[in-house]
Image 1 (spheres, rainbow, N blue to C red):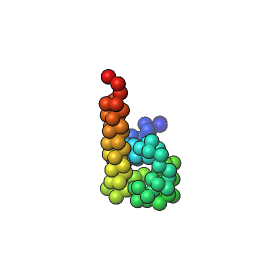
Image 2: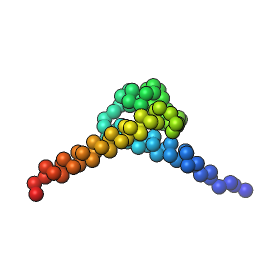
Image 3: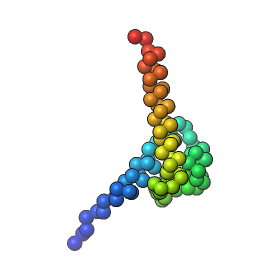
Image 4: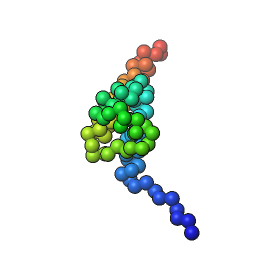
Length: 91
């Protein structure tokens, strides 16, 4: 008898979401692995492991806090950019 696949715990899903959003923000901001490592306070090797999925981000760590700040900064810049683009459009 086969067992059903295990669901991720809420914590694992939250880790995955924070990590995915931080990696997308870094990509959109043009941050390479070295710059992302400095930004969230980990080594380049750790960033590489985060990217390839062999390491998770601990939600209670400083790196998760810094990743969340990166996401917030990106969202602020993205919103500001959209607002200034819309206000500059001829109306």
